[in-house]
Image 1 (cartoon, helix red, strand yellow):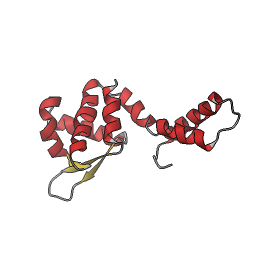
Image 2: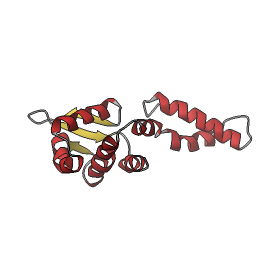
Image 3: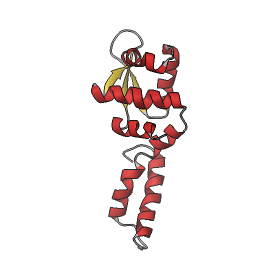
Image 4: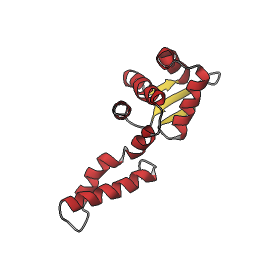
Length: 138
């Protein structure tokens, strides 16, 4: 429920049942659920990253998540673009389209910044370390 994604619940049930089966039990106990949650909570992230192009993985993992590691969890779209534009080799319009895609896929949150213009604040919905790990393992 905390993750807000049904895929996490489905993966949690599947993993908890497998844990119980490995221990030759016919019932799932709370320890099965606890250990399964550590895997299941990243199911949406893993599934989304599998569908990304290498350039999208680079942008999310080695760029946005890396910037988030060193700075505050809230970053501006223009600020991040200035830091990563040379590495990703795309214009601002394509960059912003990808940000919107990540937002629609519930990987980041884009919110209107309380400044003039169309600046958006970027916040990761997952731990930056986990995003880097998932994007790097593809």
